[in-house]
Image 1: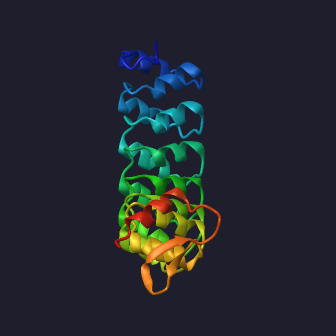
Image 2: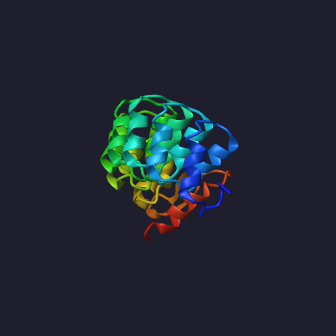
Length: 216
């Protein structure tokens, strides 16, 4: 019954107010029909249990309740789910990433499409090859000019790889990075528009598409 998206909110409330962390409570907290104020109550208990995790990922969860979880500064499961929630505020994600950590909650914050482009830029300008930078370079909101900055470092690392794959990345910048790192080479030095694979290993499918996008 509690898994039914049309379940009466009052029934869901009764289940959750028992304060238990059993399967029925978790299903109730996961239900999209669960009232926002009830999800707020669950997260307000400050626990990192199954029912709190389900509440944290529910898109009905109030933005302020999600922000309050992140302000605790913990790197636990419930914080991870909060950082992935589509209802989390950009300001809350900004606070997480400006702590400068490379932990799980920061990585999820960097992945969230609500993360402000200027904050993704701040992360990448640290010049690190860590998990949070990897996800920042992958985020579809990452500004093209920042992706170009990353690739101009000419490093062959995961952050650069993701920057080159990002659909916001200018194709020419991605091609130049690939050439600089020996992934492809120019077939004819006299014709800079002709490029081929550098070795027998196939170029990543995403990067292969970029080659085809380069204007002849």
